[in-house]
Amino acid sequence: MPSIPDDLSQMTARTLAHYDERAQAFWEGTRDHDVSQNIDALLQAIEAPAPFELLDLGCGPGRDLMTFKALGHHPCGLEGSPQLAAMARAHSGCVVLEQNLLALDLPDARFDGVFANAVLFHVPSVALPRVLQQLHATLKPGGVLFSSNPRGNGQEGWSGERYGAYHDWETWQAYLVAAGFQALSHYYRPAGLPFEQQPWLASVWRKKAAPRP
Image (cartoon, rainbow, N blue to C red):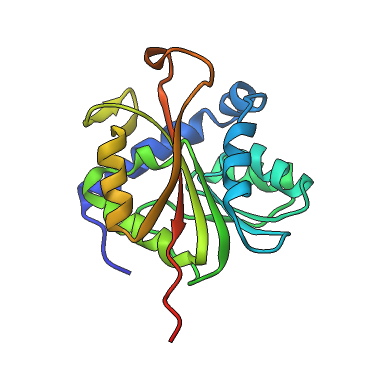
């Protein structure tokens, strides 16, 4: 595993400490959020037979793990905050890997889908290509990555104690295509509002299957 520069490690540690200190408040504030549009976008794009093997990247306290499990799939969580990871295990009964986004250690070709809801914007741009390549590698051929991030115009830096990078569609697409993904669809949330009132950019991607010999 490549070493992480100290400044990136400090960024990650500071952001995770923010979530650790506010774990219960984060659960109370997000447990009732309706992300069914995003969950459906992932599941409908997967072409493998159900039930699906799913990775909930940055699973937080486990809300979406619980949904995937209730739908009959086999979800695994990944969370960098120890407090949130413990809550996710307690709430969902699922395996939750305790890893941060800059130090991923994932099995190759393991998952039918990766659900990255409101998480990848925490990855500094300089580290994003490597993280996306790791997610590409952990998907089975033809597997699907869903991502949803706050959209922006290239701003990057601290918002309070959380680090974030905010990309527009064209920039985000360039990163994903460079990592080996094929774009399936993208949309803005919340649905039904004018564009200026839709701060979230959601997108669905397929890992290109290797050509048959």
